[in-house]
Image (cartoon, rainbow, N blue to C red; front, side, top):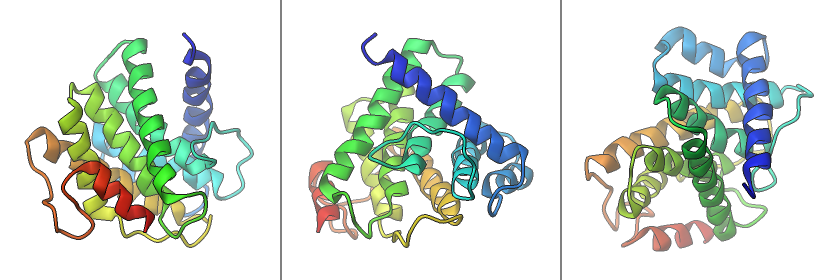
Length: 212
């Protein structure tokens, strides 16, 4: 009850700008293109709805967004994939809200390591949050959620931020795709191993590498 109002607002506002990005021509139309090419399955919808919100936002749409870590793109990314999966699974509002808390807080926690200004793309940290939220929705425990984060970082942790612009939507699409793959790997007990790139012994150590 303490956070339901802000989460309801995040769902309402971010869903609206996502739908705007799907319904009209904004930016490079990453979200619209993905749905047209890849179909309407839950994975594609989760990716496309996050990207579409950025399509609109990065190209001048004035609709409001509930942010995460100071970023509208990150606010859209932590919320829309989780919302899509919760609706697909016909879960309760409380389950959705709890997953959104996980997603928002994981993203904020990763940004704590990265800092306010960094060449590390915020879509990656936000997608780690979304992947964690989806894992939580699907019954993932702490170890599985940790593996989801690690697998996402091991895949797209090298994406560089080069400023706010329409191509952010494509980076969001790539990062959310990586997060969903990471979640699917984790639920099958599959994980990138320590020493593979920035992957360390546990998720906390992997996150600390992002800071450097």
